[in-house]
Structure formats: structure tokens, C-alpha cells
Amino acid sequence: ESPLSEARGGMRAAAAPAALRGDVGFASKCGRRRTRRGAVGAQGRGARPGGDEGTAIFLGMTGGERRGARRRASASSTFRVAATDADAFSSRGPTFTSDDDYRAGGERNLRRLTFAVCLSMVSFGCATGAIAGALLHLEASNTALGALTVAAKSRIIAATPLGALLGALIAGPFADKTGRRSSILVGNVAFLLAAALMFTAVTPTQLTAGRLVAGLAVGFSTSLCTVYIGECAPAATRGALTSYAPLGVTIGILASYFASLPLTNVVGGWRLTLAMCAVPATAQLCLRHWLVESPRWLAERRGDLEGARRCLRFLGQRDADFATLADNDESVGLNRGLKGSGGLNRPPRESVTFTALVTERRYRKPALIACGLNALQQLCGINVVVYYAPRILNQLGFTPVSAIGFVCLIGVAQLVVGSRIGKIIDAVGRRPVALGGIAGLAVGLAMLAASSHLTPAGHAWAPWIAVLGILVFRLSFSASMAPIPYVVSAEVFPSEARSTGAAAGAAAREVTNVVVTGTFIPLVNALGATGTWVLYVAVVCVAFFVVRATLPETRGRTLESMEDGV
Image (cartoon, rainbow, N blue to C red; front, side):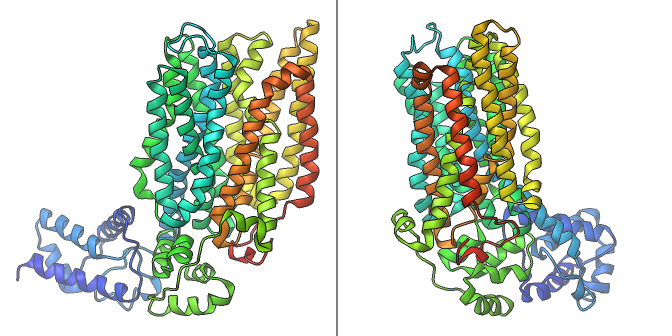
């Protein structure tokens, strides 16, 4: 045989022992690329395929033959060979990566998955925040849509939360049947369709339809993103990783505000603003190879424990974590099967219906916690501030450009706080973070009430109180009621009810959102701006005591440890 063929044989022999041991890496595009880099890096440090004989053959190859041999070696090598077994296999081939390299690779894969999933939430933020800047355009009568009535504007604004409600009701059962990964990608396609409808809108009805489709995508995103990330993450970092999902919403809102600034005086600029949700959606579709299926979904819904094990290995999680994929009464058998031949499968578990969340005692308390937290998130008035902040500042005397500019600066500060809160949630706990942030919400809303009361009296500094109030409110929200409902909703349910329960929480959030955004203008007309903000302060004070009495502490607990209740 030729030297190149002999080298191939040696490289296959090097890879075979690890494969027999069950250390085969996860067969995804991202995993294969990681294998190539590890193999080539090891060979570049002096290791050569096929032992001593293979080394001699390798040195006799031309440059092109060496590169080809390295590529073929990486294609048949393993993602990881344990360092403790390196001596046993040293005569057959190299150890491509160390334990530290494997762990770092898994953490990198988990971060990539989290980033790709959170792009759906960035699309959500773009779809939500874009209407704030677009309203300034649409209220003018010189747009292609003509003069919009109050009823038409209310329908355009309310279409997204209404669509999100429908999307949330569909997303839970759909994700249980088809998987978390495919469901997220379906939501992405809906974002692209919505962007196309809004960009080409020639009538208020078409614009409302586009906002409705965007809402359907939002329902999928808000129901599934934190569940998906939480099922892939270890308990020690689950809070931090899942908190990046609401941070994605902040990024999307901020991006839509910044996009509104240069488009304020551009004819038809509102079209580009509303279609921004297509940008992160397209990016996620391009990065879909970073998404692996949820290991817990594979174990619970498909009964595919071997596939779940491969996913966890790809995400850098150890054998000790595998036993937690099964119920407590099955963990011994699962652990034995995984450490043996690796071929153990078990019958998939049935999904839980929305009705069961109410009728079965096992799910009733988690459902009340998830739905209550998500409803309180909206009752505090966050989307009123998001939707109407530029308009509120404009009515207080700021120009449209200045109003959007101040909201952008506030969004930057909110982004900084949101990027830090994840580690605090895991270090301090869910309860202290939630309660401290809710107190800040009350302070911010009180400032808005004070500004609305003082501005008609002619105080020149009164509008600046509103700016400060929006800042305090948004920062406090980012530190409490933005991440906590998402994080807790993905944690408190047993595995068979997790996606359905999170979807129920999302549905409760969107129902409340429709009520709050739909009643804001009528409340202002009936109570005045000051009275409306005072009403929201009262709601936030009630929320503080409700959260204090009901919110469980889930810091450091595995998802499986909450199977018997929170």
C-alpha cells in the first residue's frame, strides 16, 4: 500500500479505542469543526498518527499529503479522549484534547447555543420596541396609510400581544411534539413573514396583520427560549444563562430605538423600523447549526437517553449529570444503562394539557406561581413605558428626536444592568433580586406621577423628573421582573409539564399585556396622567407582597429536584 493508505490505517486504529469506549463526540457540524481543530492542533504540537511507524510515514509525506492525512484523521477522531487513558493508547495514536480542553469546548458550545436561542428574544424586542418610534411617523397624516384613527392605532399596538397570546397557547404542545429546536426555528420563520408584511403594508389592516404574525412568533419565543436554555444548562449556571433571554429583549428594544433616530425624518422610515425583527431572525437561521436538541426533551419525550447523553457531552456536562435526566425512581437504572453499553432507552412520557395545570394538584402551585409572576410583570406597566415613553416625553416638552434619544440612553443603561444581573441571580437568589427590583419599580412610577403633576404648573425641571423616573423604572425592571418570571417559569414545573407550564405563564403575560396596553389611553383620559401612574404604583406595591409570600427560592437546585414540588 502507499504511505498515505498506511497512514490512514494507523489513524483509524488511533480513533477506534476511544469510539469503543463510548466517547464518540456529538455528530453535529459544530462538533465536527471542533474535532478538526483539536486534532490538527495536537498534531501541530508534535503528535503524529499511527504510533512510531505512522510517524515515520507521516514525515515522509509531502505537504499536501500531510494536510490530507490530518483532515482524514480529524474526521474519524473523537471529540474527547480521556487524559487518564492517554498512556494506554499512546502506541496507537495521540490524545487530541485534554479534560480542560473538553470542558472549555463544552462551555463554548453551551454559550453558542444560548446566544443563538436568545436571538429569538432580540427579534421579540425589535418587534415590541419598534412601534414606539413608528407611532411618531404613523400619527402624521402624510404616510402611505393615511391618517390613523385612535381605534386603528390601538388595534396596531394590541395586535402583537394578542398574537403572542395565541402563539403561547400553540407553542407548548407544539414544542412537546416536535422538539425545542424546531419550534424555535418555526418562530423565526414567522418573524420573517411578519417583517415582510409590515414592510410592504399599504393599509392599516395589512400592518395590523403583520403585527399579529409578529405576535405569534413572540409567543413561541417567550414560551420556549428559557425552557430550551434551562434544559441544556447545569444548575450552577442556569439562572445566569436563562436571564440572557430577557436581556435579548432589551437589546432588541434598544436597537429599534436607535434605528428610529436616523429614520425619524425619512419618508417611509417606519417601514424599516417595523421590519427590523427580520435581522436577528435571519442571523439565527444562519447559526442554526449551533442549536442541538434539548437533552431533557430527548429523554422525556423521545425516550432517547443515548441521544440525550450525546447532547450533554457536546455541552460539556459530565457523566454524573446523566442520572438527573430520569425521574428519581428511575435514576439508578438510567445511570447503570448510561455507564454500561449506552444503549438504554425508555418509553417517552406523555405531555400535560393546559387543563391538567388547573385540575391536578401536582401542577397547580407551579402554574399559579408562573402565571402570577408573568401577570405581575405586565401589571407594573412595563410595556406602557416601552410603547409610550417617546410619546410621554414628547408631551412633556421634548422634541421627537430628543425623546427617542433619551429613551436610547436609558436603554443602554438598562442593557448594562441586565448583562450583570444573571450572575447575581445565581449568587444571591431569585427572591432577594425580585423584591429589591420591585421596590425600585414603585420609586420610578412615583417619579413619573410627580412629573405629570408638576409639569402643568410650569416647572421647567419637571420633565427631567420623568426622564429620571423612566431610568429608575427600566433599570429596576431589568434587575427584577424582567428576568425572574422567565427564569422561574422554566424551573418550577415537573419535566412533563415544563413547556406547557411555561406557555401558560407566557399566555397569562400576554393577556395582561393586552389589558394594560389597551386600557392605558382610556385610563389617562379618565384619571389623568398623574392618576394613572399612581394606580400603577399601587399595583406594584401589591405585587411586592404577593411575590414575597409566594415566590420559592430555586437557586442551586436541579430541575429534577423540583419534580416533587417547589
